[in-house]
Length: 305
Ligand SMILES: [Zn+2]
Image (cartoon, rainbow, N blue to C red; front, side):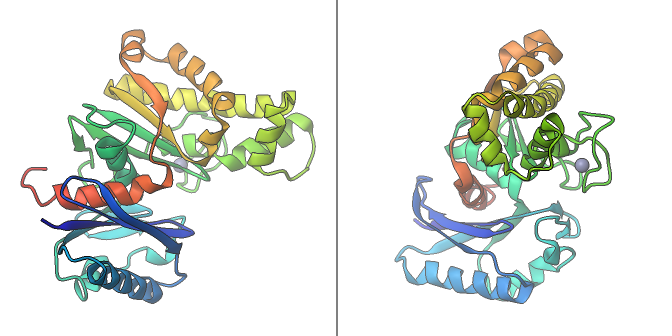
């Protein structure tokens, strides 16, 4: 009997927790993300030590979800717009210096998808695509019960599928990525364009206006929703997934965004694949990452998973 830790590093918060052999969360907590890598390593060392001291059961393994593009071969994050200081940092030797049990690293969105698959909205689904829509779009893919990582670990970047060829420049270097067209900042821009104002409202304020029936605010969300629908249709047509799970802060807009997204996804999907797919909201919120990482740490110990 033992415990498995999951650690999910975000741009502002580091979330962590423990699961037991029955895959129940027995502890979770969050703390501010440190600014520098030495501070981050010190924090991880300290919290692993605390997790060990506070529990009589042994800690068996640790799973990490780090933000950015994680290269399996190099065992490094190559690019991380949300936490640039981690780019090209030699993670494995640094963590090995103080972690004497097995540990496993992957991308944070992949870990969130694994969490929803193991414990959340897609529990026991055969296949799923998770889209986490916030300031960016994170995606993870599970196929036949396995996390689809791709040849080098870079799979699942649906956020960088082009949904608008004439769209705006993305951090990745491309134009009109799903990420640039549906994220919170784009909803703000849509609203400014529609109202011809430079008023700087947050996407939440625009949501409140939309809720109150403001036409421009509703249309700002609809525009984003249509692009989200195109992204969902790409996932449905390529993978024929059992589920598409939608999470992240922007999804709090609910039907205001979903209505146009579903309409567009239906229009652009191969009809049989669309009918076969359940599109639903994520269930674990911002805990999905650490929960997935903890399950990942547990399952990776079993051969062939
Ligand atoms: Zn992009």
